[in-house]
Length: 301
Image (cartoon, rainbow, N blue to C red; front, side, top):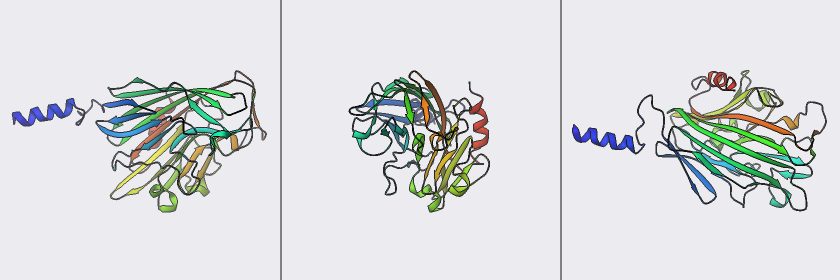
């Protein structure tokens, strides 16, 4: 009995067992152009900021049951989607979303781990939007806070502060801002479910609809896993309409449905603060209480 107790204490100390009510132990380590995050010793995600990439992004984003990623990279359909990411097309003639680094890049210049080792990991980054032969139109500061509220839910809170360095014009584009490409086995086309806060489902029901959140989930063996994106009520254009695809893509996309029906114009020095919550969860939308989780998120100042 004593030996079993000692072994259990060692496992707790190493983060392999989490004590009830004490929350998960979350660690992060910077290795080259990645920040790798583990929860109770299990690999959860990497924040990737390589100079060979179009923009920084998270991949994989592993589910709480299967341990496999609920997001995907560069599928056969629209291979420019990189898991969980932030970017924009049609910015002062540049493209900070699709393939081709010469068309524009979002360059990480200061990715850091601000906090790790307790129940929270905080990652910050400073990014410059750049393309050859043009003035940089935007810089942004990113803050990602990762927590695990239970064994079935992991949260990534994203706060992205954008500042225009010159006058900026963003033409109408479906390629704008915070986005996710789901793993193919969770896609609606493969039997998955996509549902918004109003209960509308699939691409036919959610495309172009304003909604605070969308959840996307599917069956994996005997388990169900998914990912929800929430928009904070403080965001400009809240709640933005969504660009959705049954093959596994969703993004709250204000630039495809501009409020005034024209290009979005911002003077030099304009500041935009955008806040999103990502919930990686097991179970269906109702089982994961996505609506209740949003109520908690929207009340955070």
